Image 1 (cartoon, rainbow, N blue to C red):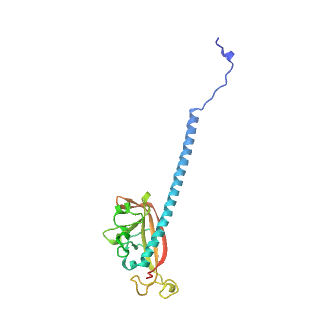
Image 2: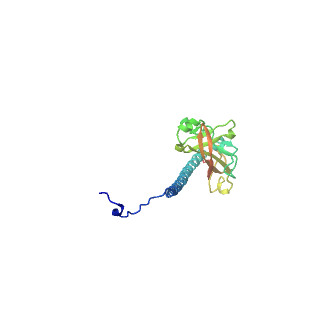
Image 3: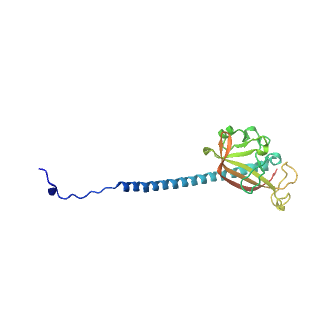
Length: 227
């Protein structure tokens, strides 16, 4: 027999979420998710920048040792590096600087030890420690590039300057560093080398393309030929 409403009694009232409540909750959740995503992107970029900078510092230090070895052990300082001009970064740095020549065959033993290449394709596919000299019509416009992180296509532009060191301790016969001329004989002064590694650059279609957020690592040391 069918029961009447009186027999069933009063049922408890059921209440759900209204459409406005659902939309409001969805909006709040979306804002929360977007905020977390933005924070993650910023954090990831900061970590990436820190990793690239650390690698750039290692590369700059390695190049400092490599260039110093050329000056100390060979006559590279006499006529080896190319004099280049037109640098605008970093602010206050000399606009005229030295770079690697297009070949080191006169200062290294054997062609296999010549780590300089003027071909972008060889730089891209060869040993990661290679130096790419972007050769222009005028040698004064040449630029030297080294890999900072080849897997990410991140390069650095390398250059350096030399200034004579005048304190008596660094003159021939002094108690400090002792140098001969870069030709291998006769007196000479030691020199201060300031190295600049500007990054990041990207290799695109055989050309070096500068990133908008250019940074520079600079290092200094004293060099001179010892034999």
